[in-house]
Image 1 (cartoon, rainbow, N blue to C red):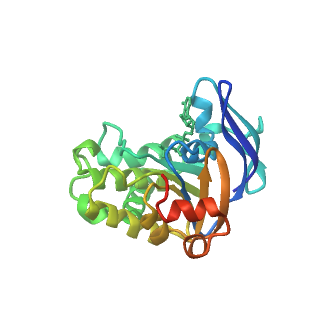
Image 2: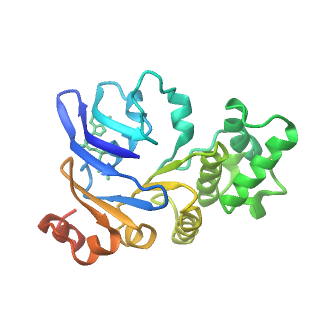
Length: 248
Ligand SMILES: Nc1ncnc2c1ncn2[C@@H]1O[C@H](COP(=O)(O)OP(=O)(O)OP(=O)(O)O)[C@@H](O)[C@H]1O
């Protein structure tokens, strides 16, 4: 995906000030920066989630495989399947584990038979590292799982519709260290198959899971580059100050 001069206004306030960036197909990109700098706002641009916020206005161009995602030809439901999202707080539907994963493929017509649907559900749960834990309880409610399992269920739900990109907005901030480690491991396994963009407050996490890091400050993209370089040899003083804990 590529963003060119993306600006977001909430009413009169310009929250994002002309961001241009490329999210690479085979990489994990981390968005870091102090609270309120616009990381989540930018992430939401990538699958047009800001459309759902009253008073939010987005300008600039974002393309997915060269297609303008704001074009009238772009079906937003389809876009959000191609660019899936995982939120801070796990939000499974109040339905069975099976239904949580089957719902998307069913509404998008991805399975021609019950067997095919079951195969998609199994594959998605396997990829999300959850199959072994839930295979004997697929009819139980998704909300009865632990927080970490619920988050992996949400990842399975995103995977089930065969996305190209997965957006994660602080996916571990509601989880304990063990559940967090599992999600980080999962991100490693999913890399290469999907482009992943992750917002995180946790710089160690950004360093562990990503190959590219974008540092935002006060609505601007200050620096974007290889994670190793951003953390060891940043070009900008503001990046240096942030990663050394001087603010944020
Ligand atoms: N729905 C909204 N309406 C009005 N202003 C908003 C809205 N969402 C975000 N903002 C403002 O836009 C700016 C960027 O917010 P955003 O949540 O994108 O930052 P962030 O870097 O993700 O912060 P955090 O790490 O705290 O989640 C902030 O000043 C915030 O107050």
